[in-house]
Image (tube, rainbow, N blue to C red; front, side, top):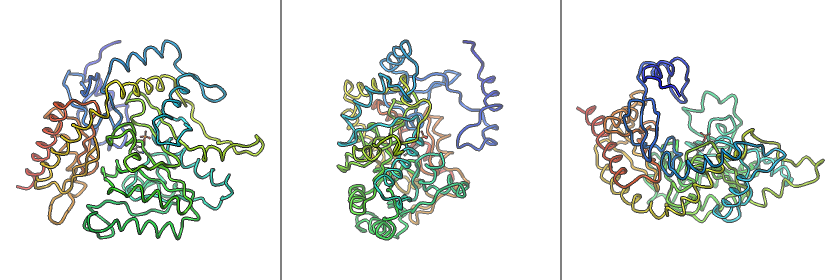
Length: 456
Ligand SMILES: *Cc1c(COP(=O)(O)O)cnc(C)c1O
């Protein structure tokens, strides 16, 4: 392979690559870091400079970059079969993966519909829930209960069930309508609560009112369990998810949980739902499923959901949906090896001291003068920066305070990407304790440099 200089790569990048969620006018003025290699928790650029991967390469990385066992599994598979379709054929790795996953997903979730990213996993979930109701003789149940601040992906169906205005407002005319409930965003509760200790989850009461009035026209409810990720790492109060499950049961709604970000260990358990002993009717998985190596997703359904689609050919109960690279053997082979590494590395157990350490560091950071709110769930955290701590006044979004903090963190060898003015902590799960310390040092120094500089 020919080597290109950093300058050449940057020039071509500016000329030809349209980056996601990026104002390209700004992008073209800056010199991008060009990543050419990865090693454990580190990304290495074209000049050999190393950055700690503080966001696990968009929340996907589990066992580190270029982990030998995963690389070998991929090489081994590519020598045998790179791809064959699931339309009309079965394929070895997709079969074994579904069988293995069925042993670890919450009890009763046994039917795996593969696709290749989080958005498609959610499109599938929404269409599946809708069609399920039709087959069960409830065609009037056409709508969905969703949450403000929710993020389920960027395709139109996923956008429709999402609730982040800055991403979604432009596309409103293209979206289907949903019924949006208040998110349990306790720091900025729209119902005026001071915090989960005092309110007894008023938002749940509001949700129940909505479901009581509108539920009979709804196919299901869509929720990111425990943690609204892209909405700003917003952590739900304990008990919230379980009570949402109870409401879904009471009013006959399918519960769709989007574990695209939380699945595969991020919250400290394999799946977020386990913290609340909740079994959804449909669950979406992606990001960590193939350890950050390849695009893969699965929408997992119960036997009850699956069973509704069975019938004579002419009844047209078939689920008419599918993607070209469904069940890709390379991705499935890596996913299988990743599950094995969870076992051999005892990864979930190894997370506990790291989660504990993260909590301690976050508690210190909470004392900084412009840190308004800390939200922590397992190996994910959000640090919300504010102009004024007492009044919880946000930084004007145009000031890009979160972005400035992340740029500053690069000076300390840390790569991070914020959510508005919330600084994100979301490292590869296999990060070492020393690396986690480096990450938190870098972020803390950067927050101080940017916010305390502005104050004077
Ligand atoms: C990232 C994400 C998605 C979308 O996944 P893509 O692979 O980017 O399409 C959906 N839901 C949640 C909770 C996510 O974090």
